[in-house]
Image 1 (tube, rainbow, N blue to C red):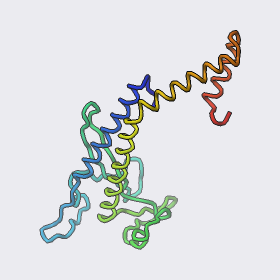
Image 2 (image 1 turned 135 degrees about the horizontal axis):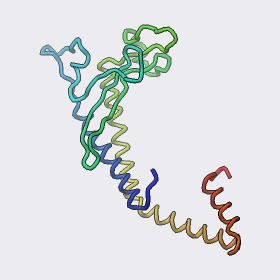
Image 3 (image 1 turned 30 degrees about the vertical axis):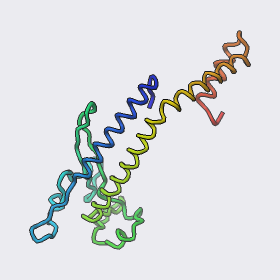
Image 4 (image 1 turned 45 degrees about the vertical axis):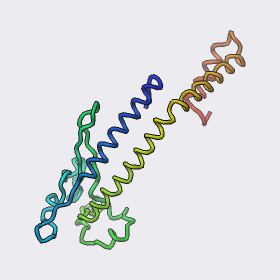
Length: 191
């Protein structure tokens, strides 16, 4: 994020906060309808309401689906938030998923084998996304609260550092001043 001033920083943080809050509300509104007898529908997408299941447009293997919610954020417009409904078998760490070999898609020559999420995996993925968004919202609120103090302290320290650099370089040595300032600014802490 590159803002013009403190107000720009707060505005950008507030916009991101609004998007995260919209996504959180959208994910919390996803429901899982069942048949009258309580069982799942045969068509996976019928088991989810409030979100759309679609094939990942960038990938080519069967089972690489995404779950997407769409929501409107004031002053930001329509936004989407997406969760992958698959993983690659070689990267599975969850013992429950490793044991569900029925969710393993057939091996495609030259590509990684896909683990396709079932309804329980999807519910867990939504729960994890909700937890992440709640954490991110709290982080953004804290950032907005601390922005003015942190901004003013850093701005003051930076002005002091520039003044000290100018004094150390001498009033007539602009070349050295800009060389040091630009090198430190671009390469810190590796300069």
